[in-house]
Image: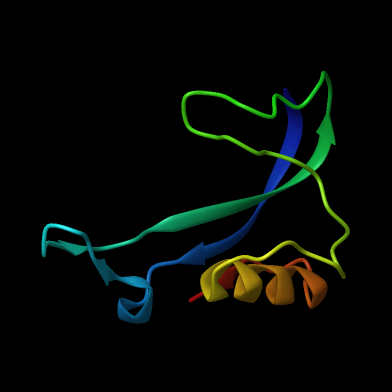
Length: 84
């Protein structure tokens, strides 16, 4: 459970939009939060996940470029909300 979180970034540029499997354009709006404090145990499998886990920031698993960019933004975080 998240106890405290801070808004880190908002991603909404057209370059984050995509075409779904049915040919429809999806406009992505991502609000990314930095979790400052949490409690409880991470559930590795839910209705929306199959392999949730923590990882070292410098050794992420195979992820899409959009998530890699988010990790790069986290490394350079200055305390200001990132708008892209």
